[in-house]
Length: 371
Image 1 (cartoon, rainbow, N blue to C red):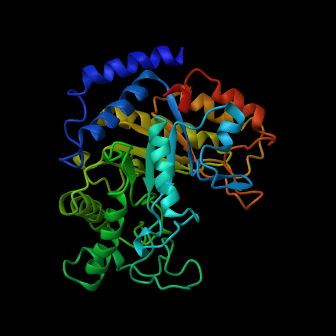
Image 2: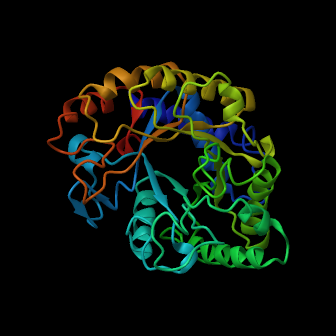
């Protein structure tokens, strides 16, 4: 049934390609990026939802660096449909990213996932350009260093020390993105999720450290520099506010510091609602409604309950919500390879494994095999 539906979806994408994706944040976006946009829109409109899992192909519970393996595949027989990874530490020309994945290996993961038909989504936990120095104790110098409220302001001041330094960091990011090519040498299209969770206070670009105007200009500056100055045209741009609770003004939080419809390609939410089911219900409903209003693809870009102590979490608290709201994806956070507790999807033998398997067998949940 899924394959039949997706055959219709892919035919519709071809027919409607000129109807959608006429105006992306990057005015020179490659045709493959427009096709990605249309693919997301069609999946969303079909009522299906792609399953994603952060770092799923790079490591999992008690294992690391076995390309072709994933905790999801060991339970379901298929990888997730969305491959989510992180650019964090590329700004230092580091060998490994923020989660200890060698950047050479991360490229292999992205190429493998693209070859398999997965959607690629990448965030950037970029360190604080004003306070970073090697050897500092966490959170000093990291993405979570909110000790200085002038960082964004300094970056935006053309010719300033911070402006020059951060442009250098983006040069290194651009250099790496330019290596993300498929087997034929074509740029791999992906969803880029910079400045995520900007509604919160803990990051140096968050609500505590930047004014509304500064954040919006930072967003536009990022697009201008990477696309116009560096000539990168393989990205869709996703905004993803942090939506952990049920909010009196949910729509206002979703559009908090909105940089303009023309500068947002994908509307996401990071929703670590725990057992507050009503929060997820409210946030997903408002997200789906906003996506229809703005005619954009949307999805849950981060979610999960650490350790999954509730064995029926997926079928009772997640599945009903994604059935009731048209979202293109739901992406769970990572399964750490060293921690017994830090995992957001089950692994083989976990108490939530049977429930997760039933969840993945739902007709609306798409895995890699369904793409």
